[in-house]
Length: 176
Image (cartoon, rainbow, N blue to C red; front, top):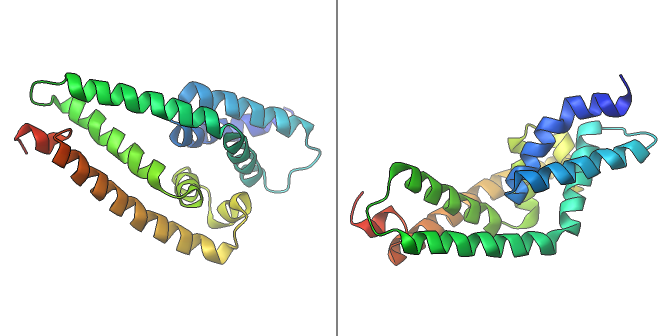
């Protein structure tokens, strides 16, 4: 088995999950992962494979930031249309979808470094790998993650309150 094939088998799943969380679109995540592995083919040596792959994938996502923004605006518009079309109390699956949308908004509201650090940690990257992928010192990864978790919780609570006040979340239906 060749090196790239071994890399693919070892890291494709975690890389696609990370990218799907980052981009909100599995097909797009697969494309970025594929391009990441194509770039690995061109690389003579890779010292820390997982950190290198995640760093390249992150940079590819940054390069596509305008496309991502357009997709998010479109998804937000669709979500808003869905909320406006709901006239009855929420069905459990609708509530879950709304909560997931709120969580996505909270993640998107984080600064890029905080968001990427959290998503990479969620995929199982260790502090050394996150530090290398994001260009941080190893000592600052823990601080970055703690700050990101705190900001995520604050952002989620603020978005949840805002949505409840507008009547677009469970609280707006007069229920629990």
